[in-house]
Length: 184
Image (cartoon, rainbow, N blue to C red; front, top):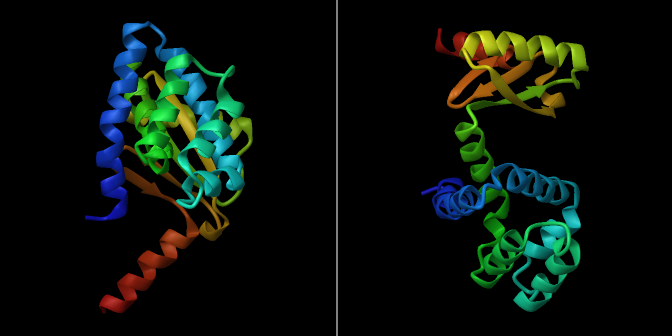
């Protein structure tokens, strides 16, 4: 079993518990915003990531750092949730847990999550045009576009909608040509 599959299997019950709590308190949107901001902080701070993932740092120190960062910024349940993850040595799964929570929350709100990797950053008009085309393609009314820049694509972009992948990148086309030439 790959590490990614293991992490997803571990993360799903935690994400479902977060969703259940958020729904019972009618705070699905607020939890979504707070967890998104935690995810953003984690993605922007490599030092915080390495600190939390380092097994040599004890749990109490990790909990104190999380309290200092998030205590008055997030709901008490989310704060306690973060502390429990540290206590149970599952803090390494936090990013995946939040991503799974967001997937579930967006699906409950009938929002389609679309991952866009492009060689260069797209401007607002390009993103809006692409979003409108994806709405037509998927038949959904709302789309959450998650963008990231990937210079290795050379040109073009890759769109992931669930398990469907649309690759219009130059790197993808070159790879297809290479495999075609190799097969002949």
